[in-house]
Image (cartoon, rainbow, N blue to C red; front, side):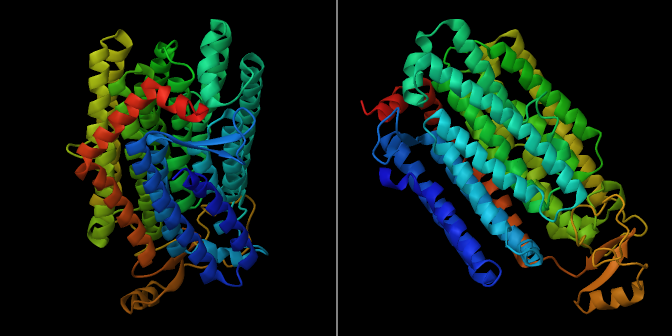
Length: 551
């Protein structure tokens, strides 16, 4: 069983080479490789999660070199759950992207980049969840950074390049801080292995421990986009294509939360800076949800709700009790799925209305009832409406806050309730504008922006394939739509493609993501029991340490 641990990392990396080798010459085979590999990773993740739950943590020393020289990969209940949820989400997003035809655009470039970059991203995420030392964790972050920059800048438009540059600058700055923290930990403890650090760090002076802890939390806070370290996120994610935004917002920020959860429980037990984390959690909730209230662009709105709901997870980490950790783990798994789903739905809405600007679209509840259902279910889940999994996760965290009884804990309980109500208001605003009200004048019957980067490149006045002059003949377009055909038109000066229905793969992938979110509600009993066992294992620490050190 231990021999399976490296496969979620190695399979995507090996498939990347095959994908690059075939390129666009065998596009179908390239897509087959990606789907097959991610399906295999999902199966392996489920196996590792079940094995870790039954047998305890599993580990493997690559090259048979023992710590501190060797690279150790560890799979426990927490990492097994994160691997399973992330694998299911990345597979859904891949199928969605294939339906949208993102990979087809690679034919315009010498090398097909989407599938290789996506597989590398999956490998980096898997490596993060399995990393058993700080250096390997840093390498996983850099793998994700390289792949993320490629995916963020697909198409090479000005907004994407600007957003990608901001993302890279922020990420490289946090990477430099991460390297400094690793150097300090090694200088102070003589190792970077998690098992050995868990034993040696408590023996160091309190000031040294606190400094290393603060530096690591800062790095992971940037990755998780907690306030005030998440100001870069609303400007970076919305410019990317819908599948890229979905996997980034739903998954990559949770990598930072996972690292906070892992290091705080394993390396720095005792909750020395719990009050500071509680303040950060409250600020993230408040600033994020107020930012969402002020938005009318759907992707930016969802980006702000993402920052807001990261606060719930930090809330659980800050309380540092078994019930709080269990609630945080449950909420991470729930939020990965629901946030990803909402961004996938945003892509369908953009395809349907030609824009993400809520003031320019409407009437979708009657015109696209399936799309309305696909939005309504995860929206209510995010808002925490009973009995959905969002309510279950928030209830667990609020109960842990009440049990703590401290001033900050009560402030977070109240803040959680207010944030949940404001999230419901935000989701209701989206519903009223995009779905419930009548169609605004000039709305296309069905449209998708050919270049989904908003086509707002300053100074670009060329009338190329993405800039078709004229207003189009609405009568001809209506006739084509009735015939079930496709035509090209313009919407407010932007090229759109009109059609009668979305690609089946996009709808199927989104439906699968919605079903996965509902599964957390149906299976809430076994899942909460699993997260409670995971929390107990994190607090106990010894199973992880003993497995890594082979004691």
